[in-house]
Length: 155
Image 1 (spheres, helix red, strand yellow):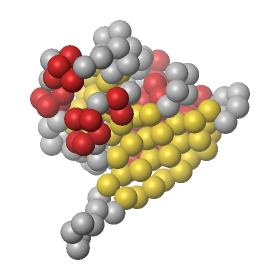
Image 2 (spheres, rainbow, N blue to C red; image 1 turned 45 degrees about the horizontal axis):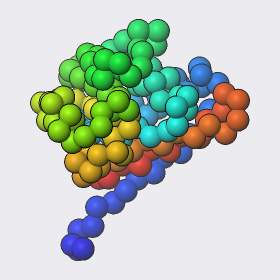
Image 3 (cartoon, helix red, strand yellow; image 1 turned 30 degrees about the vertical axis):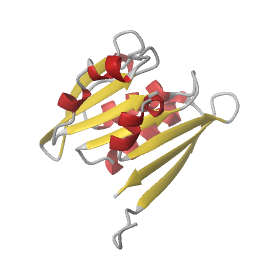
């Protein structure tokens, strides 16, 4: 391990409704400076897409009702901005991808640009994504509409 070990910053959020999860997305968006690739983890129904709605809204990329799960399309792209600079938000769902070869055909390398935020659902399935990720957002249902959200990012 090098003398300059990478620091990991952890931010915790608790929400009690979909609206609060969207608001947590606003807070998380303030912490995400492009370029950034994060794994978005959580069980089916944990609220991952709801969180992305808040992130997209916070950067002016989309209204919450315009953000949908990319389960069947695999990648959704939203264009927003922060401090007058363009920000491209990519929301990926790799649930249906089964191999690194299929993953390579998506062209994720081309999505990683200086102005991009790449949020990858089910990215933990692929060593190549885990290796490139600068952190993760983990979501847990704590009963009903309540969620615990943990953002961990490497410096």
